[in-house]
Image (cartoon, rainbow, N blue to C red; front, side, top):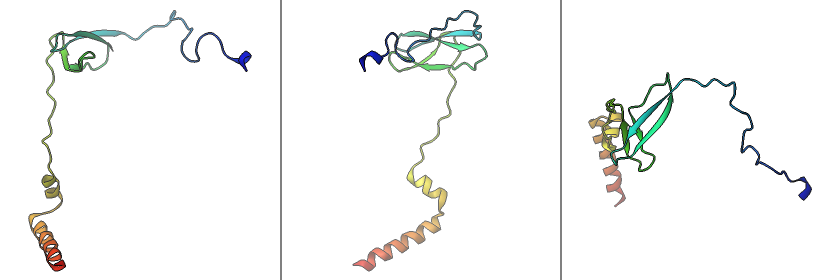
Length: 110
């Protein structure tokens, strides 16, 4: 069995193709500044829609672009409570009827 073992590079670990003759897509490098003072860059395709913020790889804070593009405001959804979701499905009259039924059921058990 030992004479059959593969030697050399690991399977799928490396590509031995060279990059000669390959034309890469146009790219652009965008810098980001973290509120903790970290600076990092990311490379994007030239035609890509560029983000206005990116998570800092060192500390995890949201970082803004270095070129001064303002961060876009995200739409914040209001928190939906259990009552809000219940009111989407039932009217107050229906809820009062259900409450009366449940109270009658509980009272009849005693």
